[in-house]
Amino acid sequence: EQGDVIGCLAWTQAPALHRPPSGRIATLFVAERQRRSGVGRALVEEAARILAQAGCESIEAMSDIDIRGAHGFFRRLDFAETSYRFAKTLAKSQ
Image (cartoon, rainbow, N blue to C red; front, side, top):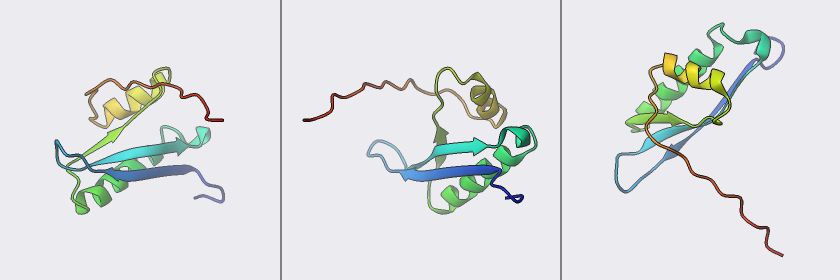
């Protein structure tokens, strides 16, 4: 924070039966005026440190396919594209 919140990162552990647990970045926001100042990198590095201490062997992040700036950000932090994500909207139950 710098008077106002300038960045926020939420993470979770993602256990799996077929591989060691990984960490997942669920949310990452940096105030527009603070972007490219190291805030996002610092948040991701701290999450990675905490997740490694918790036994996670990797960290993953999902980004909307249209948010190209986020894709470049994660690539600069040595994240690699490793899968496709498929989504389907469910009908609301009555």
